Image (cartoon, rainbow, N blue to C red; front, side, top):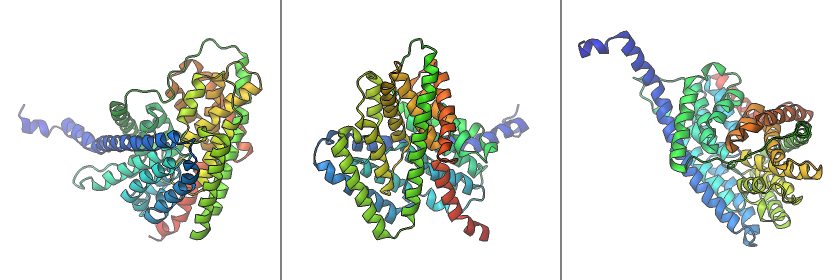
Length: 437
């Protein structure tokens, strides 16, 4: 067949169109993975320095300064970078339906730079913060910016699909959990946009996940956790731990939301004073509870999963919860996703030992699922993430049960998740300009 005739074939043209339509997802996923890897390296270096100096009195001074510096970077360079990043991504999905002009700020290059350096500065000085939530916003910004640069002469992908794929790719590369990225995109990001969650999300997650593994290695976030046969009594123990920790997670999230909402209404001077106060309270927490307070918490989770039967330190859950609490309400750039897992893990260990439960290692993972579910109200994402991070498929039933129980008990405190409420505030604040246009 003549090559010219072949190119005019309807099937060839259809395939060409589909490739061009998916090409921006593939390229964006690759770029997002590279940025995420760079962010991971910078954040890990900052966290390692802070942990290495966690016993020094110097950190008690740097903690307030780090929180203040992180807040000032966000306030003067990009206000859209302040906070976790996940509410901003959820809001972006909502605003993308009409290509709202606020997306230019919410997912700007300025925001991306501020997000990376502001969160690294926060953890460098001793802040209890994570990079996982910020990675979602950074990844989404990469997808959004690339969609704007995509030639108009080529098939243009739907903006909501690009933003959804960016968020999913960000989570997949942050935790090395491709399935978790897909589930999160469906369960949290696309509650009203499920029709656009198709192959684009899967493609973005796969490419971002592969490239992240290429540079960082094929690792398990929490290492390999093996379990033997478990007795039936573990079922009711799971219900008890998940119920209590789920309520604790919901209380934590609701407190964060209310105080953050109150703070946002204050003037600049009041915000600075509050940041310094929170920094002082963080320093006090580090001094009272010890060096395990510092960092995102991955090292804490690995340690207690490795030695679950070591007598639990009652100060450790207090350190992890209040360390992250004081850091976040200080108005910094940084996330609560990974710290929430660490808080749940320490609560799970402490409560299971107090109650005399034998399967402490399982209850640690139950606590992780429950605390995260209490904050996010995404039960499927929570158990899939922990399952993928640990490769513990034999306990899938218990993690599923923990996610469902904690999702129910968390409603005692509030019917909405922290991320959902924070995202609603962003969308509500910019609905009027959209309607006027």
